[in-house]
Length: 321
Ligand SMILES: [Zn+2]
Ligand SMILES: [Zn+2]
Image (cartoon, rainbow, N blue to C red; front, side, top):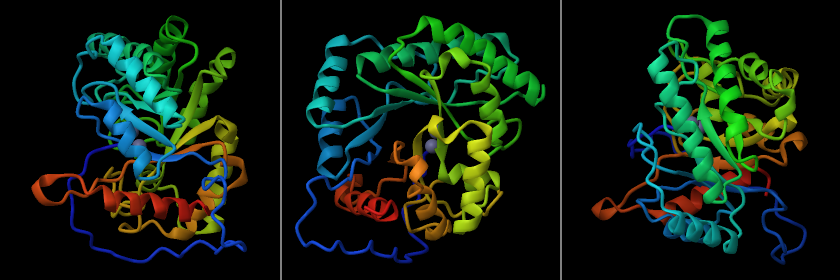
C-alpha cells in the first residue's frame, strides 16, 4: 500500500468481460466463496467505512488502525473498536485486514527504531484483535546496509518477541516489496526464510503478495506462462497455502523499476492475462483480494464511490466472478 494522488488515467484499455453464466438468474452467492474488497480510508469513522465498503461491493476490507505514517500507537478506544467489529460482522465483511504503519522496520540495525517497531507492530496486533481483524500486514523493511542475512535475522528476532505476546487469533502477514535500496521482501526466499524459522507458528505467520510490488521487483506476471512460473517460485519458497492476502494493484512503472506506485485497475501496464492467471489460480482461492488503488475524487475532493464500485467489478471480472 502506498498513496498516490494521481487522478488522470493515461490508459483506458478495456478489461475483457467475464463469461456470461448459462443462467440469467443472479447467482445466490455472487462471490462464489471468494473474498474481495479494498483498503478503505476511515477518517476516524471506521463503522461508516465498513458500510461504504459493503455498498460498493466488498465482502472483505483493509484499514489502517492508526496513523499510517506516525510512531504513536492508536489511543485506546475499546467501545469504538467493538462497534466496528460488530458492524463488520453484521455486514459480512470477512476478513478485516489491518495495514501496519510504514515506519515499522523490524530489519533495522538501529536499536531505537527496532524497539519502537516492535512496540508499534505489537500494538497493531492488539488493536486488530479488538477490531475483529484476521490479520495485520506489514512491510519487511530495510536492512540499512547491513545485508540481507543480517536484516532477516533481525526480523526473526523481533517476531520471536512479538508472537508470544500478542493475540493468537490475529495473523502477522509479511508483504512483498519492490526492493528499492536496502529493502527486503522483493525475493520470495526472504519471505520463506522468515516463515521457515517459525514452524511452531504456521497459523500465525503468513504472506501478503502485492501485484504492483511483484511487477516493481521484476517478477514477470505479464503472461499466463510467466505468471505460473512466479507462482511456482512462491510455492517453492513459502507454500501458496501461506499466502492469505493479495493486494490487487496496477502500476504504470516498468517491470523491475523498483518503484512503488499504485494505479487503478485497467489504467496501468500489468497485462490482464497475468492478473487473471494469478487471481484464478485454484491454489489461491482462499486468499482475500484487496484493492489498494487510488480512490478517484470528484467535486469538492469527495470520493467518487461510484467509480470505485466499478473498480471492484473489474477486480471480480479478473477473478473470473
Ligand atoms: Zn500492498
Ligand atoms: Zn503495503
